[in-house]
Image 1 (cartoon, rainbow, N blue to C red):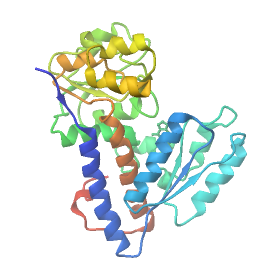
Image 2 (tube, protein in one colour):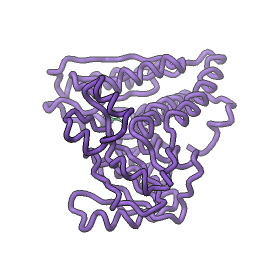
Image 3 (cartoon, rainbow, N blue to C red):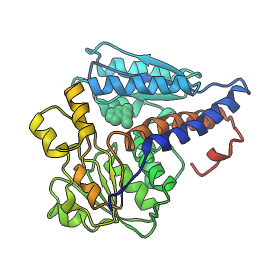
Image 4 (cartoon, rainbow, N blue to C red):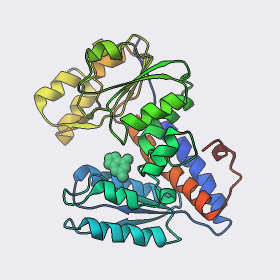
Length: 316
Ligand code: GUN
């Protein structure tokens, strides 16, 4: 039986509806959350992400500002820009889109964002809060992965979870969240011996490597839940055929656009997994929904506001 597809777009819409209830309750008190997104340069993926973030803010009545400094900006100038945003009371969340140009010390810039405005959860203070199970901002994609599991009724406690990829943005925080939720967690990376064998131990397999279709069916224990965090653009016909030969819908998409998206998980995994997040339409939509949720939470904490919307009264 093919895997149940976990519909990220539907879950993201639920979360956004919950956030909209909150912004409405805040508006009734004359309050509006505000998000500043800083985008440097012209990385095509970053441009799309930031555009979608701003659009979603508009849909949810969150004030947003897109700041596009010149590509030649220095670390000192970035720090000064972040300081200005830190000082503004109408800005509750500051998002510095990564990657930054080479001449900018990204780690130094992220350290400058006030932890209470750090809606990406990248500041070492928030990393420490997550690791010690204190309330704080949790990185959006990992938080989205946990929401998919929770809202799909997938048990985490006591399960074997394997995370492939150890990035600061996804792999490490998702492993920490799974650990905090009482899974038994293994983190794999490029030096892991017998990667397919380790992955086959997983009840929950999270792929966050950034390599198209790397997780093939031999990585997956039949019935396992597979969460695909990868978003890779395929433009080569031979590569396309390796993933999607015989899939009429994908073939039409590829013919029309000259490219299509594939995750880190090979589509053949749908034949063995119990549940699987599709790409596109799986984890991706959750990332923005969680950013909106983090922005409203940050506002409520920093400005001492409260709402009575029940969905957001859970811990964190
Ligand atoms: N670049 C890739 N993913 C992210 C993200 O979640 N936040 C930011 N700020 N930059 C990114």
